[in-house]
Amino acid sequence: MNAIEILFWLLSALAIISAMMVLLSKNPVHSVLWLIAVFFAISGHYILLNAQFLAIVNIIVYAGAIMVLFLFVIMLMNLNKESEPKRNFWRILIGIISGGSLLMILVSLIRQATEINNKNALMESGNIGLIKTLGKLLFSDYVVPFEISSVLFLSAMVGAVVIGKKE
Amino acid sequence: MTLFAIDWLLFIEKLSLIIIIIFASLGIALYMTYGERKIAAALQDRPGPNRAGPFGLFQPFADGLKLIMKEEIIPNHSNKALFILGPALAMTAALMTCAVVPWGDKVVLFGRTIALQIADINVGILYVFGVVSLGVYGIMIGGWASNNKFSLLAALRGASQAISYELAMGLSLIALLMLTGTLQLGEIVKQQQAPGHLWNIAYQPLGFLIFLVTAFAECNRTPFDLPEAENELNMGFHQEYSSMKLGFYLFSEYINMFISSVIMATLFFGGYDVPFLDESTLTPNIAAIVGIVALLIKVVCFIFFFMWVRWTIPRFRYDQLMNLGWKKLIPLALANMLITGAVILWLHK
Image (tube, rainbow over all chains, first blue to last red; front, side):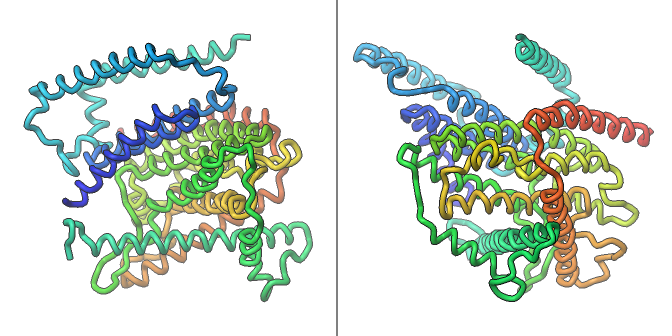
């Protein structure tokens, strides 16, 4: 086991445990905090793949901005035991069956996918994720989708301002 | 020396560097509390702390001891786990930025060349920005977990203030990035050190001004200390806190102030560069020591400025704060960005 492998297993364990805790914790504020832990673990994986830009943007956008807004909303809502929907036996059973079948489909898909079979991830090498390469690629090969998505963002911003202005 | 195929020497080198930097930051923050009280006293024409030790120099230790000795109170209706997590997060987020700051060039110890920077990562500035955006969690979680309406209100105020001023801060940094063409902090300092190149403040005066104002807001310092406005919110988000947990919140504010001074010195004032001195003529170890001292002198000037402003300017009202952030600083930062881009394009032709 070298350092990369140790880190990989640690981060994977952290990601999976935190993801489980998002679902298992009763308190929605705890769920949000576990979700932030998941984002950190995933950012750690990006760093192992030498995608530093992706890792740090993941933290700035998800952990630093979106999750703060989630926390805002949850903290201001008056969540307590009475407002929680009641769970009965049939509902739990249906949930287990549908979730389990989705898991089975996903696992079988990944096992059969020819694109990822017998291929290793490039650990700690490759410069595709570095900011210089990424920027050049975005403004040459992918300039049209990039600009279209910026228009999408602009329209979302205008929409937010319009909603905010409405009296 | 390899076990688990880890380079243990590198590991020990980095670990000792981390320990030294963290303890140095804590020590500096400790004496910043003393500095603040002395400066406040000087501005208000009174002697300030002068009982513990010569010139009151042991006052910070007395204060620290007092905080540790106080009774630890966790309110019954609070969320206990998060109540403890809040100050811990505030402290962690405050200390995390140290990792990418270049404190000096290089030293040669025991035949090893050691860079005085924990990690010169490719995305240094973005890392600083990411850690800044995590700083809100300490305030929000602590304020919410206290289960007190004043605390919650103060936490929401603090979070919305931090988010609003992050935007202007990011935009002012983009203009700087256009100039440097790199995100690595070590590289940015080296560029400013190069002969014939002025410090970045000469090229980005407006960007620096915006960054300075937003840094005040991000550190929750007066005139933007609305999350702890005593006359409106009793004591702010840490009202329910006592003992060392309160100490962590108060202390993290000083560490934040120290770190943002370091970042400002690094980005705009040449970092460890000494003006009118060619460092390559000195031996590496002496050059490194001179560099660290130069950086610390710049930092002390900024810290003094932080304190000077605190005891001079009264607090903003909340709507004034929001107006300044959204309607003045962000358009100003955008204009700065456009002008910088236009000038760079024009000069390249």
